[in-house]
Length: 214
Image 1: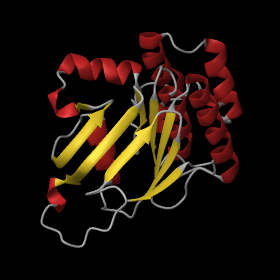
Image 2 (image 1 turned 30 degrees about the horizontal axis):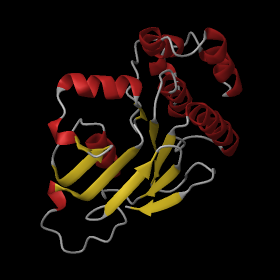
Image 3 (image 1 turned 30 degrees about the vertical axis):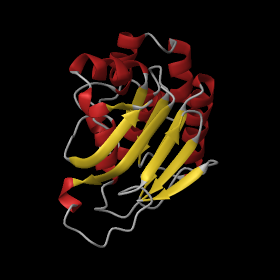
Image 4 (image 1 turned 90 degrees about the vertical axis):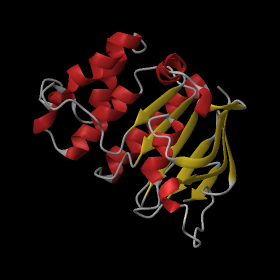
């Protein structure tokens, strides 16, 4: 997949508003593979909703979303399964990890489905992100910042044309934020993928081809 287009898209809950000032909502937006985008937003402006719309988890919007010129509203379940397995990776703001599993189990549950990363690569990421000693720790007993790092590793355990990271460093210090940004950009570069970062304040310090105000 090479291009995501949003054409006059708007959450239905905002339909009656006349004060929308946005670079995304009610605009024609083009996101290209290989480029990096920052979506800056205030709370309540639909940042996480945007991710859900593009991923096909929610359809409560007006306007049109296209993937390589195809209207996603026409996609069936099998098409979405293929897209989420091979074309899109997503780090949710709320992470969606399994608290009863260890951090490594949370990563491997995905990597065993995709066989995308080697054990050595996963171990290296745990080491670089300062959580090598947490591989066998239950996620539910780890801090949110530690969980964010685990969730990033899991996100990268699949092939993708675009990777979406929703407030990925909200609970990280500057050092770990920089390491995570380097891991993300390096992996995306390997795959020639596009990166979409969302933020309500603190964001990854990487080069952005375009900054969009939501």
